[in-house]
Length: 289
Image 1 (cartoon, rainbow, N blue to C red):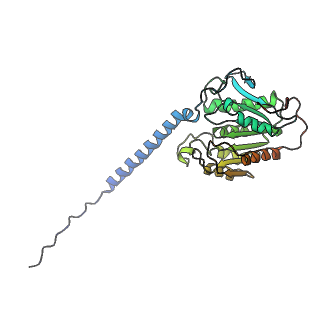
Image 2: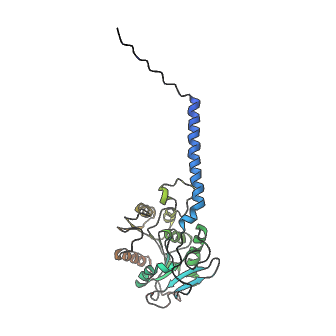
């Protein structure tokens, strides 16, 4: 007697209507997630980008210069040698003027004049930091350097670190400069988290700025940077025509080594065309305390 063969039940076919409903549901889910990410990014953008520390200096600091306006902007102007070019510094997210004395002194020791500033809500600057207020502050500081301190555009290099790279890039986009230095900077704000541009409304698109900026660009980045990975620096250098790229083994907040500082100083000097001394713009010589 032959054994009985078990007959498997036929798999029911999925109708075309059901497939369309599943596809529509999937599209709605993806759109919902995308819209949610967009709204969250918009709502918390400024709070994530700007995290001012407690002020590390007082309103009586000897080097403090205040640009009176709305808001008041705290600045640190340290003149270098007579006729020296000016380096305008835009610092990182969790820093203020009191915490970057090493940076200012290092540049001044190379013979450069230095002008640094605090974003609104940082240090002794009034107001609160947003994309709009920080970019406006960056332009005000540049205009102060030209209009009040007397530095011509061809003697000004703008230099930003981390978040400050976006403000330095904005200065170079809005005003003429002799050179732009981006240290540990990002390609754009949202791409620090997503790598690719999937969320609309991205801000501080440094890639677009360097691609269209006519001034020389130096990009400095550490291979061990875990906050803003090194691919950001490599992408910025690739986008900027005729840029220079310096890579070392530093992390995001590691102190700069002599080789990095020497690279920056040499770049600033190359940006300077032969120029007569700046009238009234150099101030007394010496190294900042």
